Image (cartoon, rainbow, N blue to C red; front, side, top):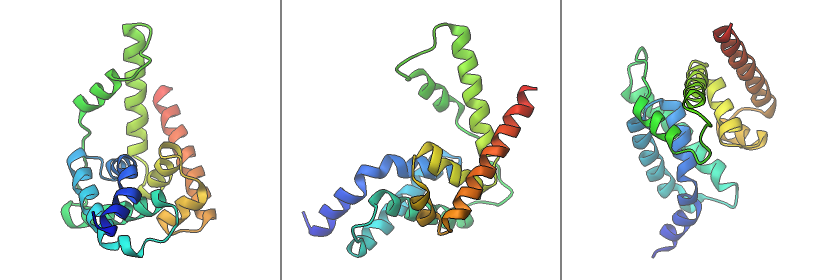
Length: 175
């Protein structure tokens, strides 16, 4: 195996799940997310020789983010609203290790998860990506700043605003 392939395997492949998760949140569509990750992997492979010993996860997520915005601008009508694949969400919920205690609890849990996902999807894209990178992907503020290309203060501000909007939306729905 060539040095580039070995390096790609060591740097990129361990983080493909995170790459797909970010692409899925940004595209809000499974097949588009797959296309975005594939394109991002090609970009990462072409740029792997320039990779220095920085955070590989952050490096890949930066590529995925940039690829997603380029891909969406090229392939999507800006007025198009994506609808999530309901069956896949239900399958994912069914595969959780610790299931709910009763069928009623399962329905409530499923409804809560759907409400949360819908509320996150409704956030403006800059708030949604910051929230997903922090609360779903678990990145620290510095890495999020590197991935999104904004100062740490902006990351903190966007995260606070995203959480406020999310709580307001969820509170409004439950009232």
